[in-house]
Length: 459
Image 1 (cartoon, one colour):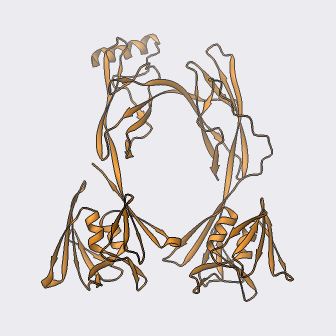
Image 2 (tube, one colour):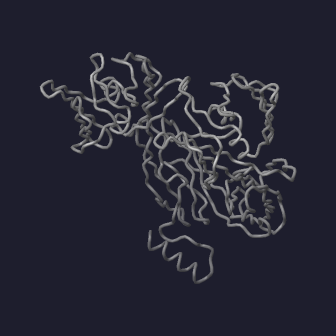
Image 3 (cartoon, rainbow, N blue to C red):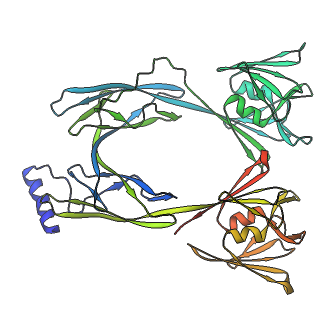
């Protein structure tokens, strides 16, 4: 078979035939990792050699279709860049035209540090007249409002008679009164989790209020006591957005593309077979792909994927044999000072509630490790607990001694934030240790004092 295909390639080169694939054609999958979570079916898509007409996946025929792609240079952010797309048929006749507008957004990043009068704007340091602080009365982080508003392009005015701040910005009109937990934004009330405060002649607002007002993302860096505020800035439109249309001759991957401070944008779309495509006068690359929705086994599981085609004589070609990994997820939710625990939505009673001790969150060790499927052994003579758990990566062994700030993880020592200790008869350990030991992810929901632990479970 391979000798026959190689001969075809030689003949094609000599006589100028259109065969462009060798004896082992290349297929490029969109998702080379081939993985998912709790799926019952999987959408498989990939690029194939242009001369192939048919593809089978596990015996089922996939759809083969034609696409184009081209990298378009963009104007400096914030901006819109027009991309005039023309689709032509094999005869060179125009069958579709469309002007796409690519939005190139800019980003502003503000960085504040607790009790510091130095801030950063996109990495450039500058002095501010008032430092952020933590209000110990309600444990809220308070930020200087004028500094944030002006750096985000808004204007701020103070009305002494009513002790009210008036702010106007991009599509935002705000009225904020001191010592009140309600603000007026564009005529609608917004509740604050803590009132605005006047400190040494400067107005401070809670961090959550900043995010909700400006549509920004706010991040807390606990190690450095820093607040990072990020907001994307859209370019002002100077055009009318074209009406999206799909005639079958042009199906764009993204009808409203937007990027962040980019120099180029890759435009891709689906066109009829045999088409040529031009964007802003430049010819785009034409290529072929396949797509199919295939069933997968219940998670956690492996599903074998066989991708096949045929040669010019109709003989089968085995392109690829791959494994699709369908993982499941363990989700544990706890609350500080509560004995309730949720495991994948099912409630359980804890041996002891999570607690904050010396600035670190401690959780009941037995309750958590049992959920992870671990086996525990308590050695009373040396006040040590040993844990063993089997997972996809092999066996994990943990050894933890009460009162010690070090633990053993597969014979390697790990430093603890605070030592393991007994509280009301239960062994309590630092939350971070649990997350790292079981290779899990941690989310802290401050408003609810909730702890969410997620661990991926692989077959």
